[in-house]
Image 1 (cartoon, rainbow, N blue to C red):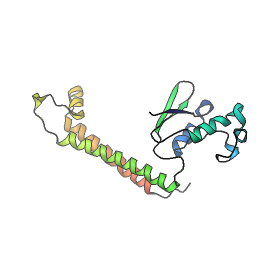
Image 2: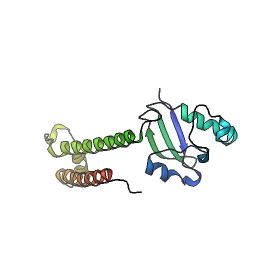
Image 3: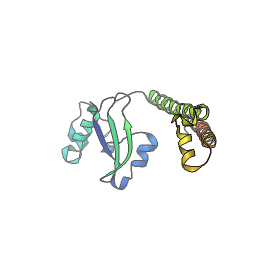
Length: 169
């Protein structure tokens, strides 16, 4: 059974952008160094400051568990799935994330292909997304599918270019 873990984006969500930009969740306190099994909760501020939370988050999550990034008391800013064990080399995480991203983009192109080339009789009841939007707006389905294809290709090229650039930060 999957567990659901919640991570706070900090007061007023001040760390949420850092979490999203770098794909990490920072568990306090940051000045205590990296967590190791032989370190005590007191090394991380004790139970009053959250040391036990550091231990629970370092040892508890398993592959397939869900992580929620919260900002405020009731706002969920992002949902993630733990796809790897606690410590993989940075290069493995780097390429794994890019593989998942490119696979998602290619799937979107496949979906658009079905919108462009799936022909069904008008009375068959079959309606892909383009047909459904055509019925709602009066704009032909081929226009919707073509628009999606163009936007998807532009975004795919943009993000492939961005993903393959050397990080200069």
